[in-house]
Image (cartoon, rainbow, N blue to C red):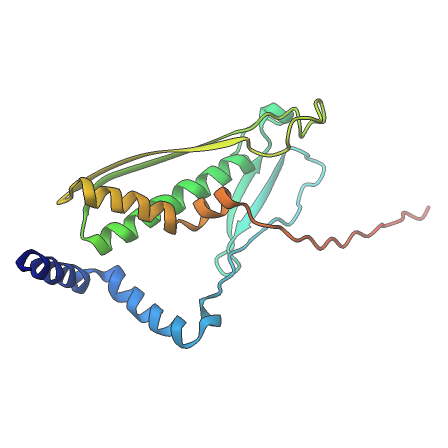
Length: 195
């Protein structure tokens, strides 16, 4: 009973000092009161410029910030790979979401992070997209995360809780793992040149 009482007190103390826990309490109250406020929309937009160049474009990330990011096409499908390609961005999204989730959960658990390194890779057989072999699926066949986490004041049980929590709570990880339906609205117009 004394160990359980100590555990409960230490858990309460940990939660009281966690900025993530404090912010999550405010959000929880908001979302319980109004569940529709928990719905968010992330975005990216490509507005085609220099359309004569089939190998390079630019994507603006986030509707408000519109952070520009140059994109290239991978050598494996004919590009120069002089800028990150969409597969690189997919890996960046997975790695950054997983690392951010690690940060949030470690703060709630009061694990002091010393170093993190999350390396995400994605493997694809490009013969499918190039229509060389129609039996090859047009998708990444596998993805992998290598995670290095160096921390203070932790143990094997807390570390396991941290990793399992990150896998369960990382939105990009869960989206890729489970797959998400994509809808498409296409407005295609023809412009005729008059001589």
